[in-house]
View 1 (tube, one colour):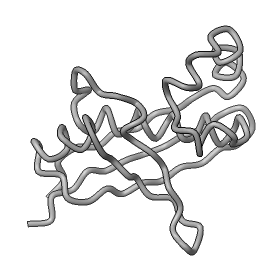
View 2 (tube, one colour):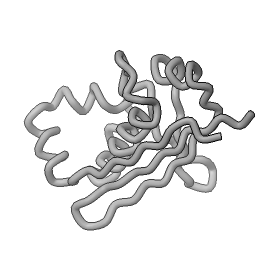
View 3 (cartoon, one colour):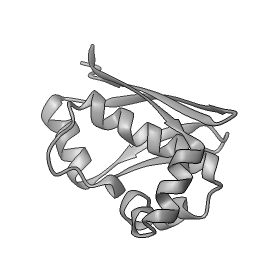
Length: 118
C-alpha cells in the first residue's frame, strides 16, 4: 500500500548559487560522504530528500542528515533513513522506499514512493 509520494525538481545552477551564498547549508543538508559529490549529484540528492519529506507530509523537526541516498553494490540508488526521518516514517508505517532520480541539463529531479508492505 502506498503511504505517500513525493516529487521534486531542482535547478542545478540556482542550487549551486545558494550553496555558495550559504556555505553552512552544505553541512546542514548533507552527510560528509555526500558533500564531496559533484553539484549535479548534490542537486539530485537534495531533490530526493525533498521528495522524501513530501512523501511523509513534511514532518516538523526533520533533520536533513537523517535522510541519505546510498548506492547498493550494483550502483543503484536507495533511500536510507535514520533518526528523525526514520521516526516519521515509522509513525506512518513506511517499510520500503522506491526512488527514481535523474539530472539533465540544468535540472535534477527525484520521485519517491513510500510503501507499507503489509
